[in-house]
Image (cartoon, rainbow, N blue to C red; front, side, top):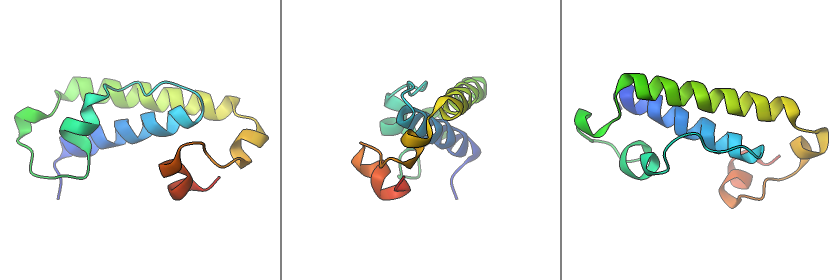
Length: 92
């Protein structure tokens, strides 16, 4: 089981990634995925950002994702993502 800090950070990173599929910015530091929120486990608590930073990043990523989704055209939503990993996970 991963700690709550990992859960929050991973949600922020994933939301930022999906937001990019709508043309937005990731809104989270790129180093987070490499240092804290990938699929590895066992990082010490000190390796994670502080709670306030995690909440801020998650809120910004969710806001950008929601904005991008609301602005997306039907054609964009029906298209296969350009990103190879996203295409495998999401299809359209």
